[in-house]
Length: 255
Ligand SMILES: C[S@@+](CC[C@H](N)C(=O)[O-])C[C@H]1O[C@@H](n2cnc3c(N)ncnc32)[C@H](O)[C@@H]1O
Image (cartoon, rainbow, N blue to C red; front, top):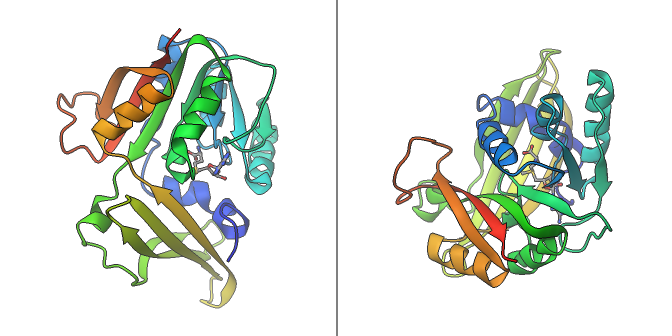
């Protein structure tokens, strides 16, 4: 079994996201970074899907990323676009620095990949100035919870045509533990050339957990954060958070 965010999982990451439409999360990051200005750190910045547009718009954001391949892709894109990007290699569980950030962002459900999310929040709090701000987006895997996606069965998750007319397919199967709110997803990536011949493939496994609203609030409090505001399903107009599958939280480190 391979580690996540290597090989085809890294090179196809942004293109699979793009196939779902424009990056709606950018708007929420802009609101957050405007409300809490100053140097920010994006945890799990990947190949720069969110970081690079924010840098181009003049926001002061650095990145932290575990996968060297993702960092390499980010640096290549930054060089092509003539953007200066400062990206640190390390893990959200333990990376340390003398720098203290005004804010930290965990977009794209990255906290859910952590084995111990409370310990991560406590650690990240130590990288923030007093009163510093935190942005986190979490999701609840409703299709898996409700059985719309059957367990242990491969299904085609994404299919895209690349610029050279080749086809990339991501297939997924999962195992779910509803009691402990943990999900294991296996991903199989395949690239076919323009004649339909298999060119390259890659297999990965991802373990994630999800948090319901009340325990999530408690976890934040336990890590020393107070919620400032929350949004549901990347919808600025949505009044109630009930039944939201995606929860975006702005919080502040208590002094
Ligand atoms: C869902 S992707 C999001 C990437 C990017 N933020 C985006 O929205 O395109 C999660 C990213 O977190 C990184 N990651 C996973 N575990 C990590 C850890 N412990 N510390 C730092 N980064 C991690 C992965 O390598 C991957 O690039």
